Length: 108
Image (cartoon, rainbow, N blue to C red; front, side, top):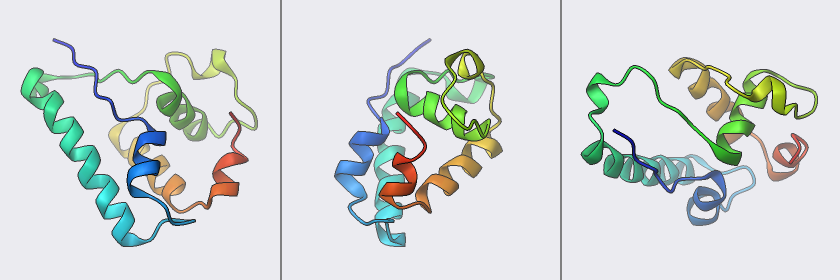
């Protein structure tokens, strides 16, 4: 089964994260928004039996590039990157702690 969750970083930032960097309340709101969107996916996909999740598009490629600590974006290195849930959380925590300029410096 598959489901596409409309949950990119731009949407979450615009709706929930106006701070630079965001404060704890804003991060909590963003996590609640993401959980709500993912909850929609959980009604369509048997998540408990899923062994692999596939992320696509800009948000996921950026997360992969940060996890790989690339000095500049490299699509060949990012393509088919596998991350554990712990690695995903580590990158997300790192990004949340950055201000806009620091995130922008990561590249397009």
